[in-house]
Amino acid sequence: MDDRQELTGINAVARMLDITPRTLRFYEDRGLITPGRVGTIRVYTKREIARMQLILRGKRLGFTLADITEFLDLYDADPQHVEQMRALAERCRERIDRLDAQREAIAETLGELEKIEAQALERIAGATRKSKCSGG
Image (cartoon, rainbow, N blue to C red; front, side, top):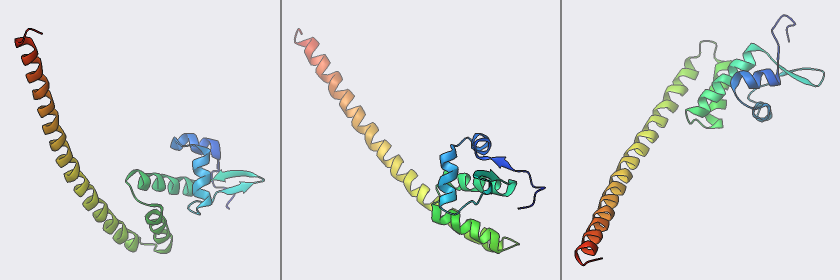
């Protein structure tokens, strides 16, 4: 590790990324980040922090750890990032297609629920009218 690189401790990185130190250790255990060590203390370079930002963005967008690992591996292997961008575009399309299908299923379910709700409210209103008419 180059001594001139800015190093940041685990707690500062966790605060910066709004995650827990445990989350950082999880991704370290999975081999997605490799913080340096000063004695027993983990220290993170700007590169590791940037990798964590990519990992968190990938998770937020619904990519699997396997997808994220592939993106990071391709990023390291391909200096021009062509293969990474190709894989990313492919995974984005797959994710978009899955989300579109979910959106359609949700819209269908919402429509059905709204119809059932309207029927239930109609029955309640009808029962209430009958009750008032029969002197209740």
